[in-house]
Length: 263
Image (cartoon, rainbow, N blue to C red; front, side):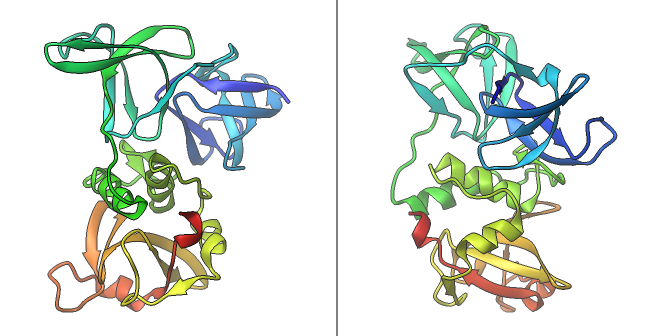
C-alpha cells in the first residue's frame, strides 16, 4: 500500500473528495498516511488510528521521511523558524502531537534549540520541547491544561481548533498513549472498566449521553472536576456546590471509565 507523509502543520480530512464536504478529522505534520484510492487530486487515506477519509494531495509529500531521532511536540504549539532565534521568520506553527525529525541541537542565548527536517526537506529550528514529569496520569492533566482556551472546531484535534474527542486523543498521544478518534470508539475501548465519579482518578474519562448516543467526553481532573472541549477547552464541575457546575452535563453523565488498561 502506498504511503504519503503530511507536510503541513494541519491537514483537513474530509468525508468526500471535495472541500465543501464535512471535515471529519485532521492529520498533523509528520504523520504517515496510507493511500487506498485516488480521485483526481484527492487521496482516500487511512490514518494510524484506522480513521478513513479524503485529503487533498497538496498537504502531502511522497518522499521518505525518516530520522534517527524523533520528537513529538509536547508544547501547546511551537513555531518552526528559519534560524535558532525568537525573531527569525516562521516556517510553520505546529500543534501538540506533531512529529518532528531531529537533525541537531544548538544552544543560542541560553535557549536550547532543535534543528528539524520537514517532509519537504526544508530545515528549521524550534525551542526544545517541554519534558513531561511524574506519573502518566499526572502528565495527562499537565498536557490537557495546556489546551485551556483552545477554540472548538468540529473534526479538529489541535490547539488551533478541536472537538471533544480530538482534544482527548491528542492529549493522550502527547503522553505516549494511542486511543481511537471518536467518542463512541473511545467509550468502546474502556467500557468494561467503569468507575464512579467519586472513585475516579486524574486522567480517567467521563462520558455523557445525548439522546441515545455517547456524544461527549471529558478528562477527570480531581474529584468531580473535569476538563473538556465544549465551545472552548475549559474546566467544569459535576458538584452543584462548585462555581464551575454544569447542570446539563451533570444530568447527562453516563459513567466514568478507568484508563488503567492504557497505562
